[in-house]
Length: 211
Image (tube, rainbow, N blue to C red; front, side, top):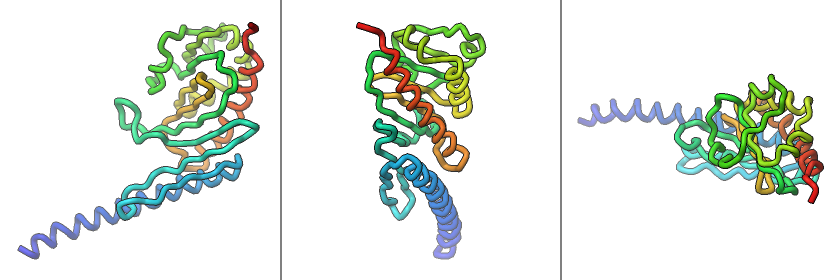
């Protein structure tokens, strides 16, 4: 009986050991990219310690200010609503609350979809952009001023590359993308996105409707 139990326990222990190593390596890669992001933008990093002997590892979060605005990176959940996909979230302070908008790659069902309730479809008149990005907004005149031809190209590229959704409202610009920031390529994309969001925030605040 003892030998039979041992034959069962040894493979189980081996599998758990391999799983533990995979978790540790993956967590270290994610933490390294976040440390580099923290250094790039002057942010503080919050890295909770592992639990249950290292089998539970919470992804790091970043908080601080960049270009005079509150900025944060987080992975708020281990799955989107109705799915098992992982999401990373970049949030930037927006001091103007006039505009509410959501921008999503065409054909991509996203978790922010419910936040766009009641917003009308906005068409830029740029056929390539309108076919690539679904935009919902409540102030079309602000978007017309903000989404210049150059910004439309950059926005479509960012959303397409990262399969992301951009939400503007409630004093925040939120950029949510599938997957974690776990390698140099995704970190560099995140760095580009942050500066794009800052430029966008400045444009939105400068495009507020009078009165």
